[in-house]
Image (tube, rainbow, N blue to C red; front, side, top):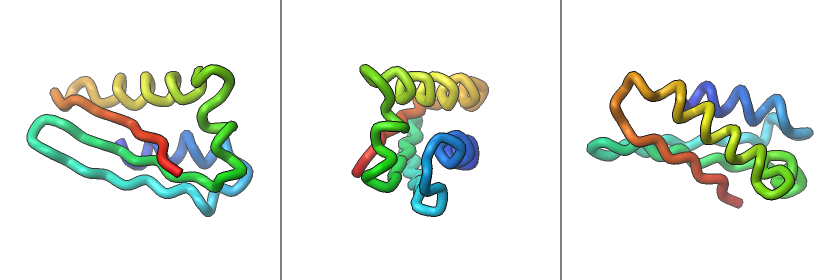
Length: 76
């Protein structure tokens, strides 16, 4: 999941070298924190959060077979 989120984010932003994904795994939950450059926050979130929602949907769909809840957080 971490690699997928990195690939998606790096293709959206102007500064791909500043993309960081942190993975935290609990019992049945996987939390992915996405950090990008402040200038790229708008590109990752999109108008009314549409791009962020699409990213979350893709990552969750790819993790369906793992039987875990996947949470994608976009942090500054």
